[in-house]
Image (cartoon, rainbow, N blue to C red; front, side, top):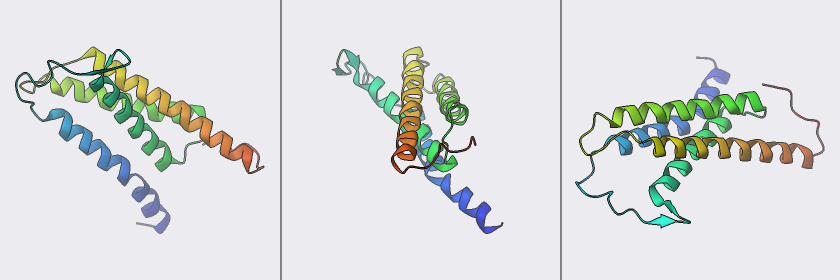
Length: 138
């Protein structure tokens, strides 16, 4: 493998590792009754915040690995994170004490989209602050 290709591959390792952690924690059976009384923050169950944060982090790691600076690329990476979360939700339907949750899927999507928007805002703010022109679409 060529050096530049190896460097690109290595940039994706944090995202891949985090995705594996999400998979493992999402498909591990939970003790019966463990999720019955989930505390809330601002009227939203804490586990939904964790879902949003997790898929936001996954989106940011993918955007960092891709060095994404354009809306189409960041949107595609957020869609990858959302689809990954949807796949995990489907698999949870096969795990005892777990189940499909539309609310979890929605929280995953909200987190991915918000992280993508924040990524773009920070990328463009960074470009504006250093005086360079807007980056070419990638």
